[in-house]
Length: 347
Image 1: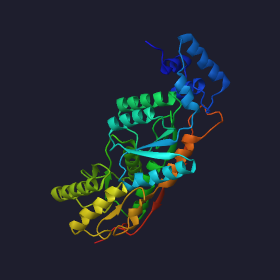
Image 2 (image 1 turned 135 degrees about the vertical axis):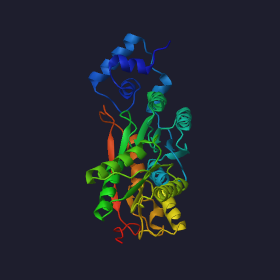
Image 3 (image 1 turned 90 degrees about the vertical axis):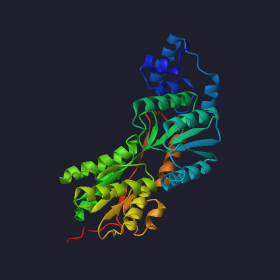
Image 4 (image 1 turned 180 degrees about the vertical axis):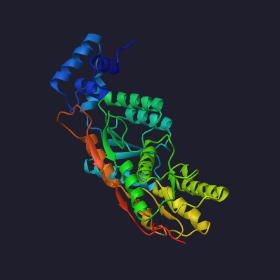
């Protein structure tokens, strides 16, 4: 069986990315000491570097691939706009691929982008929580990086990749504290599917903040759904039905951890004749352009979506220097309170 770059990395005790940079001629160099260690391991194991891979590492392909979950979601649209603008300034074309949050489709897309020799891949969708899924995606991306490709991620996809870190957990906690300061004590939470790391980070932020206040969501007041308008509407319906059937009080505040979900929440409450924020306050997350056009205008957590996309391109295209570890850029979240939230009504 042929010796792989992964074998060399394990023998040298370094990451795949470091082994790749030491052997493939990438401009992103490593220290001479590590480079010598990797070369010694390659020689000891009989590893033969891939000549086309080294050529690709030094080439200047004209395309950046962008993987996201839903091109129709304004959250991803904002990021894609930032990627496209930054790519255009660098004389490159961005190729956007929507995976519907399906890791199998993401894996196929990575392999296709690799085959098309794109200059870099930007991972704009949430990372997954399934260990086997993570391993498959990491292996495909390692093969791409082995041939000189660049990878940058928006939100944490692991230590192998340059990353635009997003304050998902901190932003959700700040939003929760902001509504608590208005006087809210009965919360409902609508988050995304457990397979998505971003959904878990945002939920963790809310639950941590509630624990600090001495609160916990009542039975049935925490709902998971897809981050879609339909998902938000269905989750809000379940919350209202649980409250009615159990005789528990309605929540005074609903935290929908995606603006698109929050739009569905507002639609369900409107159809049921429940006033916002008179009876229930509603808040979202992301501050997509739609947030200010909803009625009432949506309180939310603002993320610099276009700037996140631009930062990912900057990381993917950075040149020179000694980058033994992946680089990180930060995108800070800001709570924005609008008309959809107010102090709870006292009867």
